[in-house]
Image 1 (cartoon, rainbow, N blue to C red):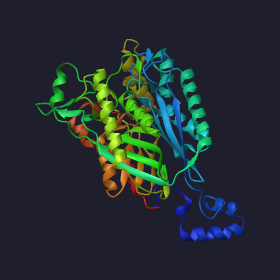
Image 2 (cartoon, one colour):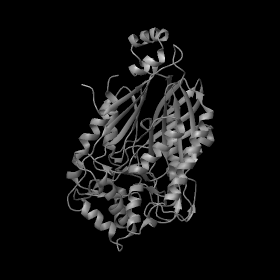
Image 3 (cartoon, helix red, strand yellow):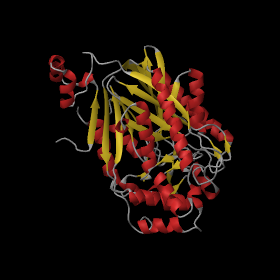
Image 4 (cartoon, helix red, strand yellow):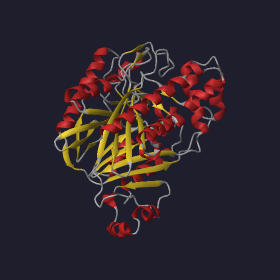
Length: 478
């Protein structure tokens, strides 16, 4: 039975032989009109157009005084926050992947980013994936939450509408400009390498077996948690390279960890992933994009003391992993391109502390600390109000390379699940799409306790829903 939640786009190379024969016949009988009636992409030539690629980069740093995560205003811009992405054109459709150097984009804000990019690229919103990198010295945007805050006179806690519109305008212009610079691409490469002494599990048991969160920068009595093992992580960084002949055109890197060494200090920065990404781009003269994987329960807490020295060390180790993955890359001719989307509903929590009344009470209490009022009040209420609206997930398959785009902050178990579905393929996972659900956890995590399931806005049933979506996006037969 056809899955009503799943939609798939195919290149001409993937059309069944009978339909290719039919196309020759349709060439005599007004091919374009009948092809549209049959739902078949229409091409002017018997062979499909070669795959082309273009890249864009846009400064998305808000102005000084605009709030970062935690509602603290930007006091200095240490380095620009960037939106970096690519547009793939197969002669019939365009597909866009974009990594956004912000902490989170949720609800209508995430949708607006996709719509902005789609319009600029001449594509459809269903063929655009936007994933935040999730640095914490960066803004958090949820325009539905912004409206709720404005209604109670607390709009200063959120980036302004004017600033948000300006960011989208710059992004649209950057995407439009890149369309003049398409290059043919005929090879795709995949490689991976271990990253040493960066990621560590945030879910570590203390001497009593209780899960204690090892945050990105342990303080006080939690410093002792740094002595505990790394825990359950994915140590591998995965790199995808699009190339023309022997010339690499763009590299995509995927690694699962919270990407911050310090935050809430008034600095806007893309942190150590931005440092490593831009240094490799400068060294190689090849466009680089970085995606954060399923890092919901992964931080740098074991190795971080919050200093500039720590940050530099993380950047060096991440860069070493990128270079090793590049060196390990094996290339093959560009295979068939498949883009799939899946509409995934989630069930939201409703118990005390996670219900509409409590979210609204937190929002309306002006004595509540700013960060709590913003996230536990406005953002949680905005998520609750959209609870009937499903999330759109997507995947891009080219030959044996599969790129998967997930919402929220999925825990690393989902990354391993996705990779396990295709043991003979190369699966790279990006989390932090639409951030509305917050943490997406395996059901067992709710029984174990800890930070992620306590903070999550959705129920343990989310594990089944997300795995069903991943399974469909990676395993559906054409």
